[in-house]
Length: 291
Ligand code: DGL
Image (cartoon, rainbow, N blue to C red; front, side, top):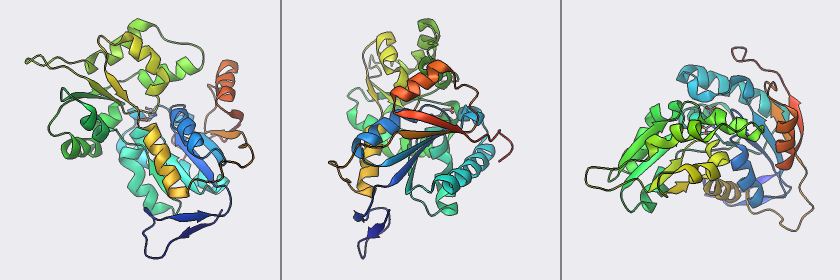
C-alpha cells in the first residue's frame, strides 16, 4: 500500500490517497480486541487484517509496568517483521495507556491506541457520577488519572479495577460462561449512590474485553446506565488515517489470527473465532519472559 501525505500536513492529521487496500494489524493481550476488530472492519471492509493475541502473556492487567513495556515492544517487533502492517491498532487499554510512546519511538508504523473513554462519558452524564470499569493495570495508570483530570474534573469518578473480568470474557467466548453471581460481583462497585441521592448513570468500558459481556452486564445492572464502548470511535480514527477505501471492491479476505501461546484454542473457541471472521490461526510461540 502507498500512503501519500498532503504537503504541509502532519502525519497524524493528514489526508491520504490510498493505492491498494492496507493491511491492518489489531493487537490485544487476548480476545478483547475482537470487539475493536469488528468495528474497524465495518469502516474498512476491503482491508487485509491480522488479529494478534498475546495470549501467552494474558492477562496484561496483572503485569508490572516495566514488564509490560518490554513485552509489548518485543511482541510488536516480531509481528511487524512477520506481517508488515500499514497500521497497528493497539486494541488494549492496559497496553495503550502505557506503551504507545515507546511503540511510536521504536517503529515507524502508525499506531492507533484504545484508551478509557472518559471524555465521551463526561459529555454523556447527567448526574455527573460516572464509573470506569477496567483492569487493575489501567486504573493505576498516570495516563488514566490525567484523562480524568482533563475531561472529568466536574464529575465524581469511581475507578473499578476488576481482577477477573477479562478472563470471564474469554471464558464466555470459549463457551464456558461464568455464573451471574461472579459477574455481578465484579461490576457491583460501578454502581454508586452519593449522599445527595445522585447516582452513577454512565459506565466506561475501559477494557476491550468487556463489550463481549455487555448483554450480561445490562441484565445484571442494579439500575440502567449508559455503557460507553470506545470501539466505534477507534474505527472512525482508523478510517480517517487510512481513508475510506473502496466500499464496492471485492469481499475482504478472512482475518488471519496470530497467537503467541495457543493453549486456550479449544474447538468451541475456534468456532467463535470463525464466526468473527478468523478462519485460520497461526501460533508463533513466544512465552512470557522470552521476548
Ligand atoms: N483487553 C485488555 C484491555 O483493554 C486487557 C485485558 C488484560 O489482558 O488484562 O485492557
